Length: 303
Ligand code: XIL
Image (tube, rainbow, N blue to C red):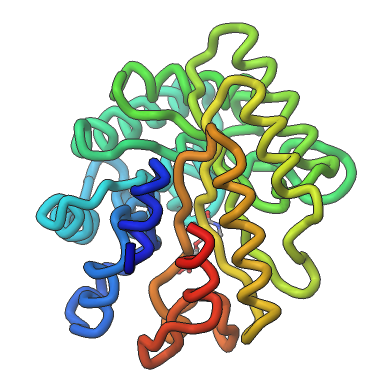
């Protein structure tokens, strides 16, 4: 196959990109997106602050535009993200009462998942619940503070009720190799699975740079999660660098997913270096002029 999406499809996987609504008017952007990718994640438009900035007022205009683009092109859609400490409006952060917070979470999850029911194949139900470092501890957030450790389980149960057909994922970063943080996520997922809490997938963001390179045990780490009986997905891949070194790193990540049968898809966190969230970096597959980089060729050849 001659495009990323078609090549991945031949291997039974999707190949997606994070998409920003405000770039959908740029023809090179849209042409590259439409030609190469068969899955879309909204880069920001399905986050809480984008969808429910004030309590009870849902604004779906930008998210719908991305969802409609995916639908009209026959692309699948990843949902990102429902319960996350960041890009969360202040009115949620200020809730102190457990039952009030539960009600607010349920309303948000039901409304958002309900709107895209039948279209989103996988939702990041909970994002980034653990701290970096060696403690394996939970990250401070309003959800953790007010509801305690059980908030993750509660979120997944609410999500299953809201859309029984979507795959429900836990998503995080710096969990890409074996370390204290990924061990903590592993123990969480094992516990949820053992107790019958509805979780279907684990997302590995896979933001890499010289300080945080692709770990040597990347594939082994994906595999140990897959062995718990969940799908694994590479959800926000980008690798800072250039040239052959960057291409080789991409090759390793793609090969790892292909070698793990339960690794069902890969999403890169943007279409072009021009609009990467890593300002100044060049971590993606197309350069600022939408030319294919060596990393692109490596990915296509590996798929
Ligand atoms: C980033 C977006 O790319 C930026 O545009 C935004 O300003 C901040 O969020 N982990 C995640 C993503 O789960 O939602 C983040 O996306 C990158 C890190």
